[in-house]
Image 1 (tube, rainbow, N blue to C red):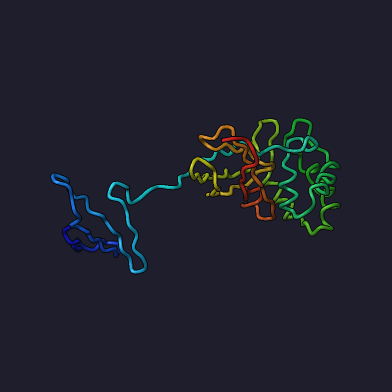
Image 2: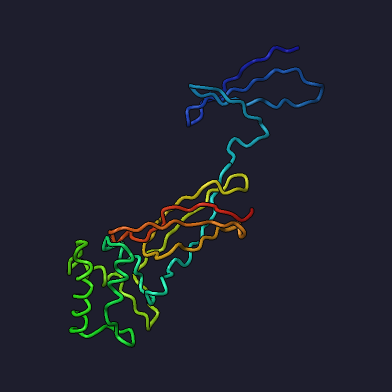
Length: 223
């Protein structure tokens, strides 16, 4: 039996040195297939010559985020949940205050005198919570809703990817949380039509992040 010899081939750019172990006893006419060994300063891992050295074990899938703009039937299409959160008052408190104002019949902006009267009614309830006239104007203008034309309030769409391993969803990456969601949006993952995914929406006083998607999780369905 021929003695084995070690031939140093070279050093890879990543710092791994590659050696070839040759000299094994072969049958007549057979061709030697060297064993490739990747060595690092910490450990050495054998890799079969017929196996790719890089294998993609995880991939991602596109997540479709739709809807998320439902409102309470008592609010006539207005995003009361978003407005209340921005003003830092309970939703029920703002809803009760808003129920006392006099809206215009066609959904258009009221004249100046009516607008001022409505604002005074709102502040009677909201001022004890620290809401000022200026803040009420800012939030009301930001979430202005034009019911007659169907134009909704300001929104930023959320964006996410699903992490897939061995055909299963193992997690989600929220690339952009978005803002302006008044309810949980509908979630679909490309390639997994029967999977049920639930979104969690968070609210706060920052208009740029109020009503943002902070969590996605699988709650049922099948693969």
